[in-house]
Image (cartoon, rainbow, N blue to C red; front, top):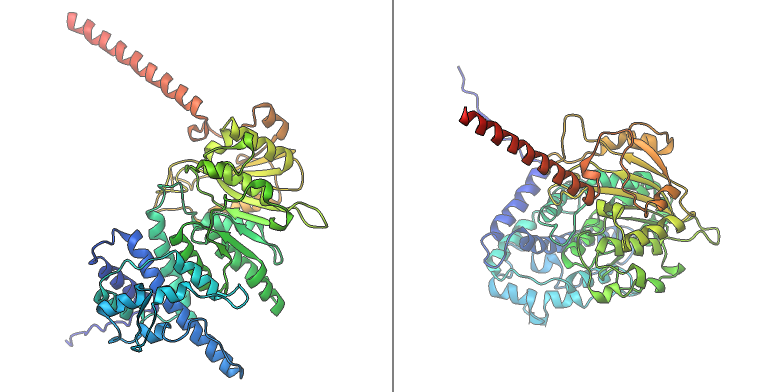
Length: 516
């Protein structure tokens, strides 16, 4: 009987790219001074970012040539990827590190000039608004921590195998890139930054339903999840050249103060097709609230601001005296309320979808005063209450979605309790929430009726209860996750007391048995 010979199947594009990125990580694990994936991730990301830029530059140059036009490159010789990184036997060792890190160094062409990072940081757009400005801002917040030029050469040779010039590979690298972002998410949380599950982002964009011509802001954009999803949502509405111009230049804006998420956000958006992401690298809370006027307002805010973090006194002083707090989530809520467009001059009222922790619903003091303003000056029309573990493994804090607009004061608030899938007690890292689970809520959204998951409350009743929005489902079972801390403490103490009583009874029975 003839022996059957196994033939090795060629690797798919995804497998090839995954293998390349895994090899790069393996190389970086040998480097002293890089502590964990959060140190390795920015290094690998800026390398891929420059490769991506060079590939897209070559595509643009070819398109311009076919159209009989001259193309002016964003990055000049010898700083393009093809000049210093693409050759396997190119510049390496100490010469490579010096070329990247030093303000002045010998380049791959043997001539002395500005170092790579120094050059990239000095780029400036012709009209103060193109990719040169993006690149300059990105690299001002970065340093190359890889000091072994030979290992870095190995990484450059691996990354040169990734080609961002075919639609298939760009589509595939998007998934791999998301896995890199996920690594960052898995290491986040210490500063109250909990990266939003894709299912939640898709749901919020779906029900807010941004329209082409509207301005959309995420003031705590992280790695750009809300902006990417909104970009795809708006791109489907584009039919004419003017539509695409409006999408590229006038639709999306973000703010992100931390350098690593900022870099990841820029690359994420450019990878998905946004030519010039308008991402502010400053602190969104740095501007005094009373200085935000109509020109700074937007049509839509979609965001998941940090919660659990604290802001310094200088930032707190940008807010009204009676609403100052160190709690980041409450400061962002005030900022967003101020940033929403007012319905004047024929403009539609601005609207918002925001993730908030449970404490925002039942908080008193400053928190209650902020909610009072929210209900009196804004229409808080919907609160979606989440089950356990939506943000696992970053935090176990219960979360909610608030949807409000600037159409007038709140008259009634609809609540919708999003259930866990049948048979589940919580979401986990390996079994996260899926977009399909929002199907019933999306159907209910446009045709609202009270049911076992949905109920409504008068704003006057909320005001009479010190603006406590933590209202449980009247049709549901007792949910300890959604109770105020005082009630949880009372329940725990009562249970402890009952346990002690039972233990005393058991001791008495045992003592009587021993005497007998």
